[in-house]
Length: 139
Image (cartoon, rainbow, N blue to C red; front, side, top):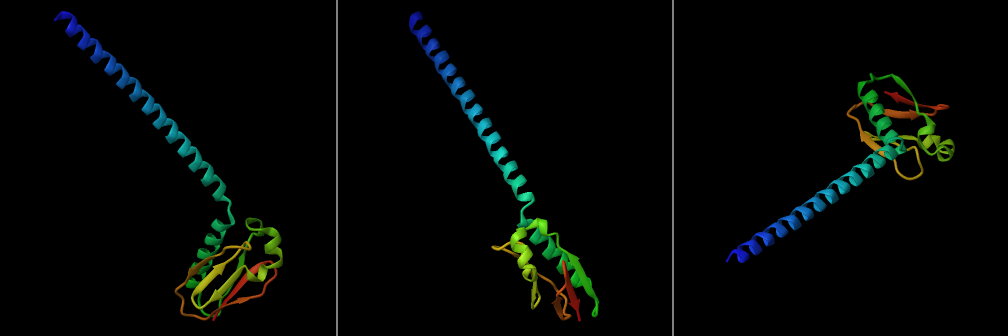
Protein backbone atom coordinates (compact mmCIF):
# COMPACT_ATOMS: atom_id res chain seq x y z
CA UNK A 1 0.00 0.00 0.00
CA UNK A 2 2.78 2.39 0.93
CA UNK A 3 4.74 1.66 -2.23
CA UNK A 4 1.60 2.21 -4.28
CA UNK A 5 1.10 5.69 -2.75
CA UNK A 6 4.74 6.62 -3.25
CA UNK A 7 4.46 5.50 -6.88
CA UNK A 8 1.43 7.77 -7.39
CA UNK A 9 3.19 10.69 -5.69
CA UNK A 10 6.28 10.17 -7.89
CA UNK A 11 4.08 10.06 -10.99
CA UNK A 12 2.35 13.29 -9.95
CA UNK A 13 5.72 14.97 -9.35
CA UNK A 14 6.99 13.83 -12.76
CA UNK A 15 3.82 15.02 -14.47
CA UNK A 16 4.13 18.42 -12.74
CA UNK A 17 7.79 18.67 -13.80
CA UNK A 18 6.84 17.91 -17.40
CA UNK A 19 4.01 20.47 -17.32
CA UNK A 20 6.33 23.05 -15.78
CA UNK A 21 8.99 22.44 -18.41
CA UNK A 22 6.51 22.67 -21.27
CA UNK A 23 5.02 25.82 -19.77
CA UNK A 24 8.47 27.38 -19.57
CA UNK A 25 9.22 26.36 -23.16
CA UNK A 26 5.91 27.78 -24.38
CA UNK A 27 6.57 31.08 -22.61
CA UNK A 28 10.07 31.34 -24.06
CA UNK A 29 8.74 30.68 -27.58
CA UNK A 30 5.97 33.25 -27.03
CA UNK A 31 8.45 35.92 -25.91
CA UNK A 32 10.81 35.20 -28.82
CA UNK A 33 7.96 35.41 -31.35
CA UNK A 34 6.81 38.72 -29.84
CA UNK A 35 10.33 40.14 -30.07
CA UNK A 36 10.64 39.01 -33.70
CA UNK A 37 7.25 40.59 -34.52
CA UNK A 38 8.21 43.89 -32.88
CA UNK A 39 11.56 43.99 -34.70
CA UNK A 40 9.83 43.40 -38.04
CA UNK A 41 7.29 46.14 -37.22
CA UNK A 42 10.01 48.67 -36.31
CA UNK A 43 12.00 47.86 -39.46
CA UNK A 44 8.87 48.27 -41.61
CA UNK A 45 8.06 51.64 -40.04
CA UNK A 46 11.65 52.82 -40.42
CA UNK A 47 11.66 51.92 -44.12
CA UNK A 48 8.29 53.60 -44.78
CA UNK A 49 9.12 56.85 -42.95
CA UNK A 50 11.03 58.33 -45.90
CA UNK A 51 8.90 56.76 -48.60
CA UNK A 52 7.61 59.03 -51.39
CA UNK A 53 4.10 57.78 -50.61
CA UNK A 54 4.23 59.51 -47.22
CA UNK A 55 5.28 62.79 -48.84
CA UNK A 56 2.61 62.49 -51.54
CA UNK A 57 -0.03 62.22 -48.84
CA UNK A 58 1.47 65.08 -46.84
CA UNK A 59 1.71 67.45 -49.82
CA UNK A 60 -1.80 66.60 -51.08
CA UNK A 61 -3.33 67.33 -47.68
CA UNK A 62 -1.33 70.55 -47.21
CA UNK A 63 -2.33 71.82 -50.65
CA UNK A 64 -5.99 70.94 -50.05
CA UNK A 65 -5.93 72.89 -46.77
CA UNK A 66 -4.32 75.89 -48.50
CA UNK A 67 -6.91 75.82 -51.29
CA UNK A 68 -9.75 75.63 -48.77
CA UNK A 69 -8.35 78.64 -46.90
CA UNK A 70 -7.60 80.70 -50.03
CA UNK A 71 -9.67 83.65 -51.17
CA UNK A 72 -10.56 84.20 -54.85
CA UNK A 73 -7.67 85.77 -56.74
CA UNK A 74 -4.95 84.26 -54.56
CA UNK A 75 -1.92 82.59 -56.10
CA UNK A 76 -0.43 79.79 -53.99
CA UNK A 77 3.21 78.81 -54.46
CA UNK A 78 4.29 75.50 -53.01
CA UNK A 79 7.81 74.06 -53.09
CA UNK A 80 8.05 70.33 -53.55
CA UNK A 81 11.37 68.87 -52.51
CA UNK A 82 12.24 66.51 -55.35
CA UNK A 83 14.55 64.46 -53.14
CA UNK A 84 11.44 62.96 -51.54
CA UNK A 85 10.50 61.11 -54.69
CA UNK A 86 12.04 59.34 -57.63
CA UNK A 87 14.43 62.10 -58.74
CA UNK A 88 14.96 60.84 -62.29
CA UNK A 89 11.22 60.55 -62.91
CA UNK A 90 10.41 63.79 -61.09
CA UNK A 91 12.96 65.80 -63.12
CA UNK A 92 11.25 65.03 -66.43
CA UNK A 93 7.67 64.90 -65.21
CA UNK A 94 7.47 67.89 -62.89
CA UNK A 95 4.35 69.12 -64.66
CA UNK A 96 2.59 65.90 -63.59
CA UNK A 97 3.56 66.29 -59.92
CA UNK A 98 0.34 68.12 -58.99
CA UNK A 99 -2.93 67.77 -60.86
CA UNK A 100 -6.25 69.33 -59.95
CA UNK A 101 -9.47 67.97 -61.38
CA UNK A 102 -12.85 69.03 -60.05
CA UNK A 103 -12.43 69.08 -56.25
CA UNK A 104 -9.65 66.49 -56.18
CA UNK A 105 -5.94 67.24 -55.92
CA UNK A 106 -3.46 64.51 -56.87
CA UNK A 107 0.23 64.61 -55.93
CA UNK A 108 2.54 62.21 -57.75
CA UNK A 109 6.25 62.05 -56.87
CA UNK A 110 7.06 58.71 -58.50
CA UNK A 111 6.22 56.83 -61.66
CA UNK A 112 3.78 54.41 -60.05
CA UNK A 113 1.39 55.63 -57.43
CA UNK A 114 0.18 59.02 -56.31
CA UNK A 115 -2.14 60.32 -53.63
CA UNK A 116 -5.45 62.10 -54.17
CA UNK A 117 -7.25 64.24 -51.64
CA UNK A 118 -10.41 66.29 -52.02
CA UNK A 119 -10.92 69.89 -51.00
CA UNK A 120 -14.14 71.75 -50.28
CA UNK A 121 -13.59 75.13 -51.91
CA UNK A 122 -16.24 76.07 -54.47
CA UNK A 123 -13.82 78.48 -56.17
CA UNK A 124 -12.29 77.54 -59.52
CA UNK A 125 -8.77 76.23 -59.03
CA UNK A 126 -6.09 75.62 -61.65
CA UNK A 127 -2.39 74.82 -61.82
CA UNK A 128 0.00 77.40 -63.22
CA UNK A 129 3.34 76.39 -64.71
CA UNK A 130 6.22 77.47 -62.54
CA UNK A 131 9.89 76.57 -62.49
CA UNK A 132 10.69 74.41 -59.48
CA UNK A 133 7.49 75.33 -57.65
CA UNK A 134 3.88 74.37 -57.83
CA UNK A 135 1.68 77.38 -58.44
CA UNK A 136 -2.07 77.17 -57.91
CA UNK A 137 -4.46 79.98 -58.86
CA UNK A 138 -7.74 80.26 -56.95
CA UNK A 139 -10.37 82.22 -58.91
